[in-house]
Structure formats: C-alpha cells, structure tokens
Length: 72
Image (cartoon, rainbow, N blue to C red; front, top):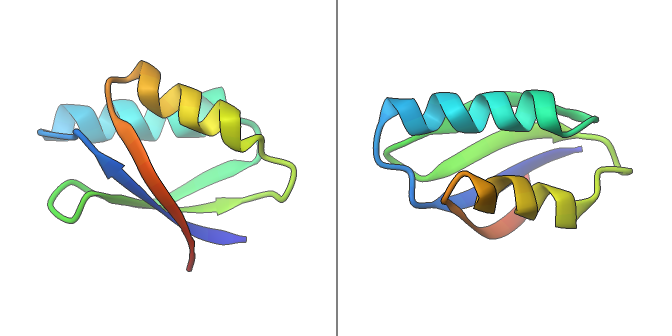
C-alpha cells in the first residue's frame, strides 16, 4: 500500500536523511519512495501489518510530528 505521511518539523536535509534512515531501518515493512522537505511529506510503500503506533513513535523520537497518513 502506498501512503503519504504528512510530517511536520523537518527543517533541513539532515532531517530528511534521519527520517529516511529511521523509516527504512527501524520499521519492518516500509520502503521509502520519496521525502519532501519543502512540502513536508514522505511517500512510502507499506505492508498492511505495519504498526501505526510504532510508525508514529519513530517519527516523534526524531523530533517530528506525524500529522496524517493518506492513501496515495
């Protein structure tokens, strides 16, 4: 399932790199397709068994806020 994650709090390319690493390595079943610093989103392919609470936890641990998850 392709999802668009609306993420607030990213301010630089370093933030984008940290988010990409965290989503790719810390959560099984997610493949990052694109992250946009300017538009504050990440496009991911995600298995249906991905724990959304874990996803939110990983994003918040980086200091960002997961505002919404939209079907893409």
